[in-house]
Length: 369
Picture 1 (spheres, helix red, strand yellow):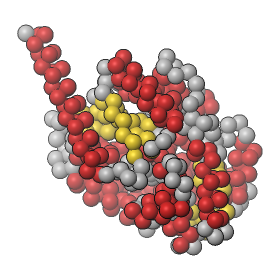
Picture 2 (cartoon, rainbow, N blue to C red):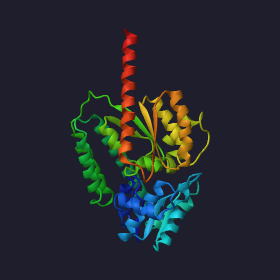
Picture 3 (cartoon, helix red, strand yellow):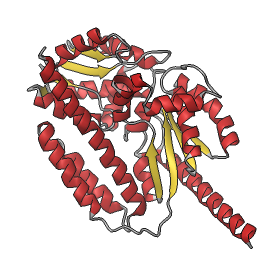
Picture 4 (cartoon, rainbow, N blue to C red):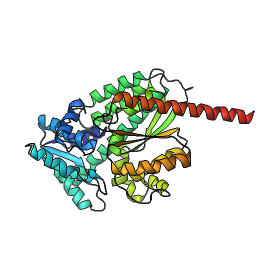
């Protein structure tokens, strides 16, 4: 079995390490690129959301490298992501690819089915081996998220923010050369040390911006046009509400105890939206409120074109922005999104936040005099 999976931010790092430890042959798709998007757009329904198109491109590029089995996470509720596996299987079948697709839907109480799919994917029914590998993968996922958040912080304070890019590029290249959890952990540790050595200017007071929205668009840098890096070079400290490790915590561990960050977002969103609207629409509203309460300077909502849950959230965010007095920018992406216009909108938003921060500082000085 030669196993692959779609790119979804940095998830591939943990999945690759975990599957390699289980002795499976892993085919990591090439990084998302213009070719990936072109392949996906060519063979997907025109009106389907962007993540599915990228998925199809990833699969074709992996199959070209020999993959014969695809792993994908599922979803539930009123979101098209829940139908991705069915649509994707039909598209690949029409293209003549004979490939097996294993879907990891959130267990939602049905752990037996969830475990059955895991045993099929990892080609063993040894529960201890599976649990150990899962736990190791979970740790890698968390460490990778922590590494990228640390790189965001370094970029905002660094004397030369481009030094962070060089080190993170080294990490992206290195992670494909190491094998298994132990080697991956060593690499992460080494990259942390290199980032720590970067000279910073602690007198900087960077703007703080929270990223919310549809999870794939938030965590996949090719789709969001590397928004974290772009904002970092503009002197912004970025925080993403949704990350792969938080998704795991919510769906497989802390969420069932009511302790996950997503549960907190549901509570925060309750005055505006009381029920599931699909995808992460409710979390988008709640997390924007949480960022406002933490004193963030602004919030950016990201969503793929035609994403209904996020369109619902977008309409509510206008009221949230007014009630909490926090600027919220919505950016919609699809295969026609132009980078120049995207950057211009980001620059204008950052300028607005800077001016607003300076005006507030000036008002405080006047009130004391």
